[in-house]
Image (cartoon, rainbow, N blue to C red; front, side, top):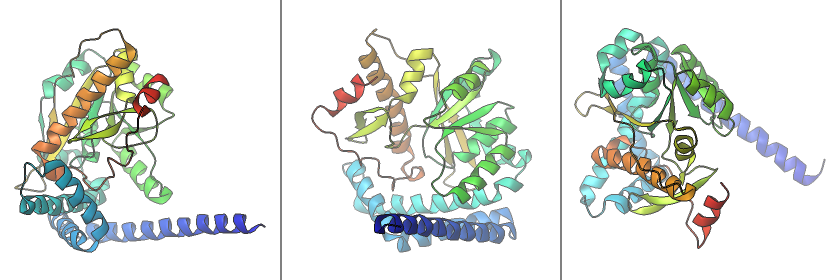
Length: 322
C-alpha cells in the first residue's frame, strides 16, 4: 500500500469514527429527553442552545458576522447579539423536538401548530395538482412535512441531500418515514419528483443555501449569493406552481408554531429562458429573505450562504450551461 493510499484510508476510518461518536452522543441525548416530559425537554434544549452560543465560538462568530453584514444598517450591535443568541436557543428547541418526534402523535401536532393560508394549500390538493413548496432552513422545518402529512392528510415529499453522517441520516429518514414524508434525493430525483407531482403531491425544497449544482447569483440580504435555479427550472419547464411555505416558532411559547402558506409566486414569462430563470429565482429568493427579515432569529445564520464569490463572467457561464 502506498503512502497516499494509507493516509486516504486512515482519513476515511477517522471520519467514520467521528460520525459514529456523533451518533452515540445524539442517541444518548434522545434517551435523556425521552425520560423527561416534552415541555421540560424543549426548555432544556433551549438551555443547551444558549450554552452552545458561548461554547461553539466559531459558529457564533460566523453567525454574528453574517448578521452584521445583513442587518448592520437596521439593527444596533446589542440587537444583533441578542438575535444571534436566540438563533442558537431556537436551534436547541428544534433539536429537542426532533428527539421527541417519533413519540409525538397527530393530536400533539394539531394542538401545537397553527396553519395560516390553508386555502392556498388546499386549492391544489382539491384539484389533484402537484406543487412545489419553497421554504428554507427556517424554524423547525422538519415539523412541516409531518403536519401536512398527518393533519392535512396530504401526500408530502421533500427534496433533500443525505446527511454526510450516515448514522444520523438513518435516524432522520426513519423519522420522516414514520410521519409519511418521503425523501427524494437531491440531484438524482427528476423521475421520482415528476412521479410525485403527477400524483398530486406537494414536494418541499429548501432553497436558501449555497449548494453544488446549477445556479446563478442573485441579491440576498444585501450581497450576491449563489442560488440554485432548480425551482425556477421546475416552474418554467413543467408549469408547476411555487408556493412559499414557512414555519415560525412562537416567541412567547417555544412549543407553539405557525405555518404560513402564501399564494403561488406570480410572474410574467418573457419567452427568454435565461431571463425567466433569473426572474423566478430572484422572486423565491426575495420571498425567503422577507421572512428572514421578519423573523431573523428563526433562520440558520451560521450557514456559509455567501461562500461562493461571484467572478467576472461566472453568472453568464452558469446560465449558458442550461
